[in-house]
Structure formats: C-alpha cells, structure tokens
Image: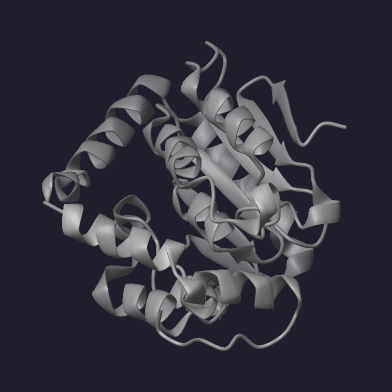
Length: 251
C-alpha cells in the first residue's frame, strides 16, 4: 500500500499522505519519499504543488513507535522540510485535520496553508520531554514571531486554525465544507501566474529568511540532544503511547 501518492494534472501536482490508519504519522519510508518528491526539479508544465492527506488527521508528526519508540528521524525530517522549503515553485498545504509536531512543521514549511476551522496545529514536544532542533524552531520564529513561537513551543497546546490565522501562521481558515473550494481558489490563482516570476520571488523570499542559519547554535543543539536522551523523554513518549499522564523528574 502506498503511503505517499503523487499525481500530476497539468499545472498542478498533488502529493497525498496516505497512511490514515496511523493518523498519517511520518515513518522513515514516508520521509524518504517526501524528500524525493521535492528534491527533483519540477516538470515543465508544473506551476504549483499541493500537499493533502487522507483521513481525518492531516499528520500526527513522526511515528514514535519506530525503532522501539526512540526519538528518531530528526535529520530525516529536516531534510524533507528543507526540500519543501527550497522547492522552486509554490507549495500549498490543504489541512483538513490536526497537524501536530512534525505535521505542524510540514504545513508551515509550505508557502500557503488553507485549513478547515476544525483543524488544530501544535508543537506538543514539551509535553513528552522533547525539544525541536534549531532548524525546526527557527521556522516558527520566521512565521509566528517570538510571541507566537513561545505560545506554540512552551505551552505545547494544540491551537485551533482560527488562532493560527490570527497569529499569521496560516493563509486562510474556512468551514470544513468550504475547504476544497477555498483551496482550489488559491491553487488556480497560483497556477495562472508566470512560472519564472514565481520561481524568482520564491527564491528571494527563501534567501531573505535564511539569515538565522548563520547564528551559532551548537550549544542549543547540545541541549536539545540532552532532552531527547533524557529519562523524561522516555517517560513522555511511553506515556503518550500508553495514553496516560507523564511523570517528569527533570532528568
């Protein structure tokens, strides 16, 4: 069974997360396939790529059950998100349901996010003893600013789509029944624009937002790694998988 489906229809390429039975949680195979889908140059006829998901959940983040539930895939998810961010043509995420942790980052690395009002977004890592890498955290700063990034990271709550739009993190939120029409309106407008102009302007925007890459952050990486290896992280992941409240001890 395909976990990532890719189809093209003239100017629009559709990439679909198709692991609904696992809430579209990203395993190693999916991360690799998504990276490949965006690492390759676009076809001559393509003007825009759309990311959608099957089932009620857009993406529940990394599959924590892989490799015994250890924290895995940080480098792999960063490579995938980097490929989406650098893709030369616009990418539109159509979010019908919850986008959590890596799913939240997947949506926010797209150029436009159109979401149903019933969708929720969040970075719940603090609730399971983990922390985002520099690469992942700086995306939140770019799109949400310090106040929005603090709300998402430190509180760790799932935010309704309306709050995401209020913070300026997503392009548009609409009633669930209107999601397809609202997404199509954005997609068709992008597809009608000049491709060379789209490529030039996207390259400009990406270049302008990469200044944080040069900030020294080895010490931050060390803290993130320490959190990921901690007893609290093991407890947090186990508690989430067992659907119980975690007991953190700060070690």
